[in-house]
Length: 446
Image (cartoon, rainbow, N blue to C red):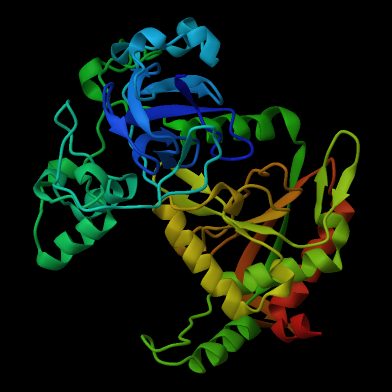
């Protein structure tokens, strides 16, 4: 009988997503492992593979369709001897009213990129395989390429249509981009790297204030919508929060950092590392959370959860938004391990290769804008965390020591607390312990 393809859940919390592109059309024959679609969630776009073989008998949800619910029927696979007459959508679990969407009604979208990640679902799975095939385009003339390849081509100013694809069905994949960069081929004009605006006038814009030809409206993708929704909930309604500020001296920390980095093998050799100030901040935060467990907590309606480990989210700015990959059990890791882990996850976050389990959850967060010259700021608590730490720039300031005005390298730290779970006294105790660890890094060894 016909086999349904349902919208897969690409993470434990996913409820809906955008079916951004079909890589097959009705009548195409597919085998297990063939990449058939790209699905956009709030943080990434993931490739989806078929796990059954047969012929695509019907595409129920058109590409570009937004807010497609998990487990909604999106397509049907036919076995040998079956035809479109054998398809009964009501029996397969979908509804023509809710599932069958016209392409022309689907809003254009801003493309996002990601690498494959695990995806549960009855007839679909994420892509991990590749095969050699000529470069090809879809019926709309667009070059078929993986999300990661698109991202790399955009960042490097390459023209995908000038690059031979060696992936499934001739799709351009990562190795093709790397080869083009090595060979110096595929260069595109500056215009090809620009984000595609969608047609003005944009919905809700008063044309008397902003004429249609005076701006470009870039459509909100799933990530931006999720950020807006969650932070609006956190800031305006659900989380009563308050900030605590403290100035921290970095003299001893900088000296320790210099000494540790001086011990590293030369760059390019095995074992090379470069510890950053932020790595010390993560380590000190973890140590302080273990020392003050009341601050390492999450609020629920029935109970306050005091966590046994310091799972710290590190805010990383990516194209179109912000993501917080998590250093799990940070209190058990050394500076070198924390440094390597953050560099790896930050790099994969910017290319949207993180798996959902690497950025969902956690107990605490750190946001560092010091590299942008910001001296002091307050972040919004990222639920379900009980607090978030904002780190300003380290800079030389005139301070008083033993009655004398001296120059010291200082940094302003702001702790924003969810008052439902972290009271003022608890927050003050945490930030006091944190300050001790930062100003005397060797105490973290005790």
